[in-house]
Length: 338
Image (cartoon, rainbow, N blue to C red; front, side, top):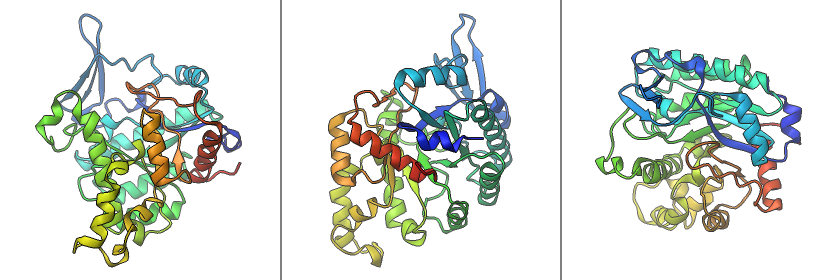
């Protein structure tokens, strides 16, 4: 169980940190997940028909909590909220396999947290292809496992403003927890997407940003934030391309016929952005300054993609006042008091 006193006292709280958990291996039917090694000793990780070569999870911070804690100490991170690996959202597979995986993943995540309750908390994986099951698993994860929120992909097999999701959003609000959204590479267990994304890691470099931007636009234009004003949603990577597209999205509010009545005024989209939360995993201080200029700091959170290929800790060299603000923001989002 997460030590909320330690969380409340933390001066740096990382909310973008993924895990690969031994207890979840083989729990999604034919989709795995599965870890193995080549004859030459090189690691591989399989999810369905997708195979990731050369990334060693065993013995790394992704799987070993002790290694994670040591690396957090080096990075100057007091507390971390651990989330599912984007390769294993499993939003497009058979519901029974997704339900099985999410349940075992959340059990294993709770065990990791319980081993280091003064340093770690967790976000729950959810089977979003079955909304009733997702609601049930979220309630179990919060009330029985003491995880701190919901964690889903930006592509869940239906638009984020689909009316069928209202029951899920209502459950998140009723449980008084945040909802985190993060992309996954196209084609892992769902549609393949643009074939150009298969070159130069563009599924990661541009595909993620596109998914996040689509998610933000859908939540705002689709009326999700309007229908559920108490819903706290956090988007990874500062919402993808929001900083560069905000002008176009603002212009659409007064120019496009499909815009809902409550958004038909100048600057409505940008105003709605203030209702969302974003993390700082943007790699470049110029971009971060732009994010702050447009979105402010009231709902900005430290995000590192801890131990990932593009980890960006931003703890030792970040402005102290901004660091304090982000820690306070995280405590508000996670429902703890400083």
